[in-house]
Length: 483
Image (tube, rainbow, N blue to C red):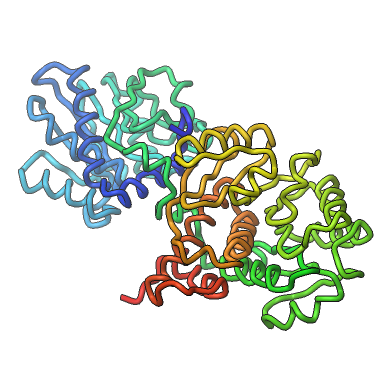
């Protein structure tokens, strides 16, 4: 739905979102295996010998399922590695089902033990979409043996070795005759000298349309991370208001940014710093953001991974002129919110912008909206394409679009109409945009902030404050529960 071709990383998100919508990976694996078996039956005659060469991941699990539908053939299933190290419960369960039913299953614990024989069909299920780079043993030896055989080779989802992010097929990868891929084509498949079948395995369209917990799998925090690895955010705000930029900066920290600084007028610097000792304030002269301060703010912005522009700036003409000049000269990543939004349609900028209007602000920018989220999604996507920037339009259902298609976030509750939650969203998405593409940052930010608000409402009912929401953000992002 969202792309004609889907990368392996995006497919992993879709799989998790499908599970969140009630279609678990076990069910999808059953459908995938059945599709592989259909392809084998299309190229083999009853009684032909079929050898399945499977890895220890879910790609192998798909092939284990397929084996149960191939009783008309002389079937052998080779597992590369020890069964005890099969990576997932569902793949292990399908391996054990074959073993318990006394199929011909064999463990290949090293490359010297590999014996393909002379099968009519080989099912290549060693490595799936989550693997990239040169093949390691025993897969490397198995791939060479598969390519040297005279068998018809059917690869599961992608040929083992294909990089499902870039579409490249490295030396030593399997060169199949046929590929059965699932849900949508993967990058690089169209370039193969092979017949590619795209199997519908029952992934609901909603798994791509709606933002769900699967999107959170894009987040990571490796153990060897160093200071600065998760971004530094500059919030440009304040003047008439002080709470908004402080909220945005605090939200950026709660969303994982390593540092959040606030560039603000000197007249309110002490007030903003007083909200939270974790905030670093970088004042500029004056009582508002004006053109005279643009050089100073650009200098600060150059040392940050993303900028959050708008919270608490106010609507004076001098401030709009300063925003216009800043965006015209800035070439980094910025989340634009609140009073800064009205300037965006008239600015020619090299910056990567993520704009976060509510529906009234969207109309003020020249966009259109509608009650039904599907109609609104199309309108937002069209306007994002016209602007050339990514939009996160807030509402009962948030709509996110980079101008190509749109996604919808359904978290959040009526208690979040309280003032300041938009500043929390702006700061959260700015933190995410410091390390992720802005469309992904927008989707995850909308989901996380809405779910954090839901968590607060579940605990205390309505009457929540915007300051309550950032405290719940880490629990949502990292799946921490009280159970």
